[in-house]
Amino acid sequence: MIIDQSKIDEAIATIIGYGGHNILNCIQCGACSAVCPGVRAGFPLLCRTLIRHLQSGELEEIIEDASSWGCQACNRCTEVCPRDVRPQEVVFAFRRYQANQLAFSTSSVTSQMNLFETGHAVYTDPRELRTRVGLPAQTPTSAFDDQAKQEIQTLINNSPMGELGLF
Ligand code: SF4
Ligand code: SF4
Image 1 (tube, rainbow, N blue to C red):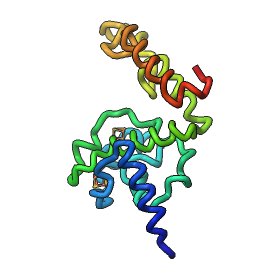
Image 2 (image 1 turned 60 degrees about the vertical axis):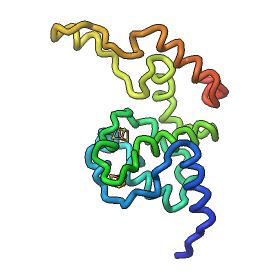
Image 3 (image 1 turned 135 degrees about the vertical axis):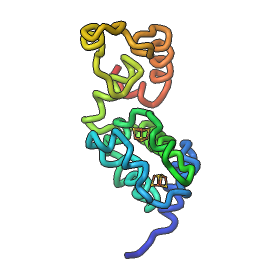
Image 4 (image 1 turned 30 degrees about the vertical axis):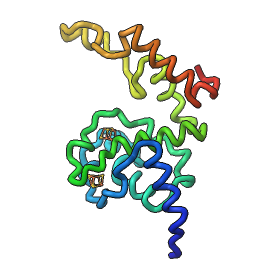
């Protein structure tokens, strides 16, 4: 197989430019994927696999994939990584790249709507269950904080996502 080094360099520079500063530290050990709830939920291109594609220069080939929108920003990957890659930052760098290219798969639209309306890309209304088990109905997150939601919506409206006309 012929390796296109300039394509690889371009992909790495793009991801570093969007905040995935330590992508080159990755040794593909897989520790991050083993603890990632997004991978377990069936989003294949997170953590190790996403980084492998990016280290191979395959930026355009995966631009339509919706996995990055399944990242819950839990940072388990960051906690276990032995090389300080901070995989969540790589995932978000790729997500920023997708957003700036206005590249959204159909299946990621729901995540974007959730993000706009609640501040969470993955969101399920918790109130009924929490009430049933005797907990306060509302969680202390942006989903129930009007000011936080307003700030999130201002940020989104002033980003390339705002140009999509989804919100
Ligand atoms: S931060 Fe995202 S990529 Fe990392 S473990 Fe959590 S869901 Fe997976
Ligand atoms: S844990 Fe770190 S070094 Fe291992 S595959 Fe994930 S990002 Fe790469």
